[in-house]
Length: 309
Length: 307
Ligand SMILES: Nc1ncnc2c1ncn2[C@@H]1O[C@H](COP(=O)(O)OP(=O)(O)O)[C@@H](O)[C@H]1O
Ligand SMILES: [Mg+2]
Image (cartoon, rainbow over all chains, first blue to last red; front, side):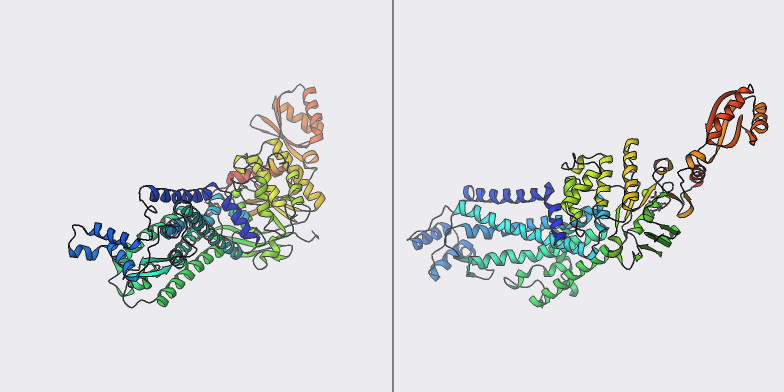
């Protein structure tokens, strides 16, 4: 569609968009370099005698600890899990580093919020909205093309994050097979999962937050025609969301608050925030919020006058 | 007039808040004419134009573009219109060419050749690959006009296109506007708050004040040459002068503020002066007041109050 193409052209014609990708790349590289040098990641090699190596590690770690401390030590626990289940530990490699980088999806959310907040508001600030709307194209289509463009940006930067993380990880830490099995702490004990499954899970859940917050920013941008406000508000809510939740937890209706539901991971690891919440419930709540955000954007964008000042 | 109107305003009203900004405009614009939309700042020109192109809703009334209502048949109506509303704002981080391509993609059947054609028409060939952020206001006006012409509109609306242009720029705009009207039968609406900047390009001028249309005048080509004008002559002695003019030339004259004031046609001026000089009247200055339209406009501006 021509309109989406137009939006992408405008997005990538601006330096700030490219700066986001550069920041992402620099951080990924930085994490890898730090991990390799300071963090000592990937330098620990398990060989044929991995059982002895693990025993020795445990011995070194537990030296001077009492029983209680030992019972709580995560590394010792993990090592014991390997020994009990007779699994050779994987060396730190590209797959683990990609999984570790899933925390960068918060940055992705941030960038998507910035793009979503600007895509409507900037047209008003630049005054170009007037020339944009006096075409034989409905306002609905124009708004839709802008929203699609935001999602496209999110997707592009996600692909970039994954690819660049993978390449960097491969160069720094090497590749142990196509889809190795990893041992991870699931909150209540260790489990074995395949690397691809874990990557999908950790990035997938963070996308929920990204989609919701960018829809929120998009709505604020359409209603108030001010990108600063939209960015500020959405980022504030994203950061403060969980603390705000803490505030309202005591109330019954707290489970209907957006932030109680954005972390779908709570149904896979650990326990739901509020008793009685279920995955379908959260999905429904998120869907309702999402629709409200988009419908409000649409109403304000299509019905309101484009006046001066 | 018998011609089909290109655009018709029918009792157009606009309220913003509790204030009525446009108070019932009725007029028609015909193909091939240049219509001047004249009024002091704050009179409601831009607001009217925003309603004509669907950026603002009409509180009452309707705008018909080639018979199609902007309210109910928006796409069909707007397809025929090219416009600049207020300042010609473009994306500053893209080149002029990219800006034009951007708008071209939003309209059916605008080819690369057509874009090149309008660029040449407005004389931007050299600067078209520069970023718009580096354009002067005059260059942006031209790019704005180029953008409005891309799809060969039958109605062209230009809001204060002479803003920020020097006299030679204004002359150039006048040339392509006249060309479009005369050769391509486009109906052109040009708004301005300065009569002097648009009177030479317009066929008709509508004067708007405080949201009301108070006059529509036809600008005759002849106006500047044969119409009766007010002539003020600083002469000593005044009495003698008046007698000469009244008795020899049969022209009524009055004395106002140390000046001889009379109405005459342009071609009569030399003989009036000659008679006065022959009658030993000394002349210190002759002032020819311009068309009655300008008087009218200036009077109106003087009274215009922005509530
Ligand atoms: N968005 C708005 N809200 C309130 N008043 C407005 C708005 N836009 C314009 N006006 C008022 O409407 C009047 C006409 O403005 P405008 O159409 O811009 O005049 P012009 O273009 O003739 O200079 C002015 O008095 C202005 O203050
Ligand atoms: Mg104006």
